[in-house]
Length: 274
Length: 353
Image (cartoon, rainbow over all chains, first blue to last red; front, side, top):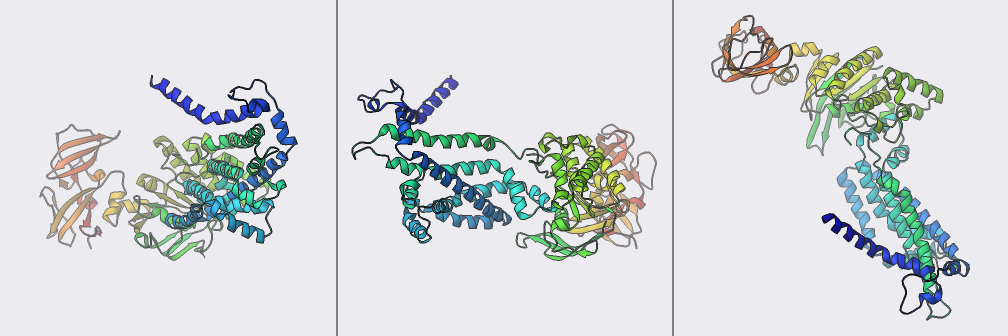
């Protein structure tokens, strides 16, 4: 009885969460006259790929996806490398001191990113990085760094100290220890951090809008917001939904790809009792 | 091969609040199997880590092979270490685990392979080289950890309680194998344990530590026969030492309850502690000092039994070849020559001058 209740509740929650996504896909697949029909029909009467075709042919949507990909992948990689170096150094301190330093990092996350838009734009335009990938990548890296350092430092602290020491005696250099021992052994934490940073970069709107003003450099969220019909009053809902469905896909793919690493318990068998 | 020497080494933790090592002076000769023995928290692991270079002494010098190594990183000290929990690299196969230190030192590939195979042959793990540590049993993991230490042929081996995570049977066989192995290598070994049986059975030289200080060091049997301190006498020995409080007056020891009394040639008077090993109490033959008591508890050990006898207000443990019944009246006896006297306050051994 309890089980039935549990399953039906879970079902309701899942339905509630997934419905917008279904609606997006359904709308994307409806021909235009069906999208605007009143009262709205749930299931499309006839499937059409017209919206998807339009998004890619009439608009530079493929370019947006490419921009988003470069920026999101670039900033995720950069964030992870810098955060790993910082967390590795922090681990050498005793816990009290490391925590004190990390609290300073948190200050960066207290300020809402929107507040930083103007100062960041000023800095980036002085550096001549507006409308260039490195500008946005650097900005995303800095915004995500506190979070990534916290994650990685917590993961590094959980590694048995003896493994690190065995590596020291075996003759590993510092960088070799980080890349040869620490990173492979904290893959679950790194995967989670990577996914979350990637999602942030993929979805971020306001900074991307400011730092990449020219149309060819738009990222996907900016591109979608710029989708418009022939007049101000016409919003091409079918195309918007097709674009949204397409941009959600990479995120799902990445999570599916990293899931194996997130779930595996990698340190099993290294140290007795773990 | 090399000797290890510590000169006036001190180490404090938590900003001086906890003294881990207080002025340690120690010299371990080349090719000696030396054991640092002590209860947990006595500083023995800190001592080992200082020799390894994983910890810096606050003051004092560490010498390996006559060279001061205080500022030499662990990898350049020509030492290798086996950790209590083995600390294998979980993401590397057994072969890689063993080979990595050679590879990092730039040995050519064929030589690395040859050496790894040689060592894994000696330790009988040759058929495990393709596995990951998590696929091995505790005993096998321990052998891999040993192989990783052996393969480099260092001057000094440091072993931190390498047997304490094994179950009793594997521990016994591994102990014997380790002793044979290191005897054959003629290597200098610094071995840390809290298990006095291990220390007695394996070592050429024992260092007994308590509270960050060395209480006594020397040959295992000499320490057993001639402990310098109450702590040493209690810690070393198969069975726990009997301690009886009493006093000496005009060269005669009398226990506080008056049940045990005998003449001694100890000059000192006043309150003392008497230490008597269970294996020195006899039931069969009559020694100089005869007592009368009632059996309280019998713990069979196989060939012998550990018998607790109530004598006056004290309960004496004694090793007996026969297993008496409970509440049986026994006549334990011992020879005054085999007892130890300790100062009640300092715990130092009192010897007749």
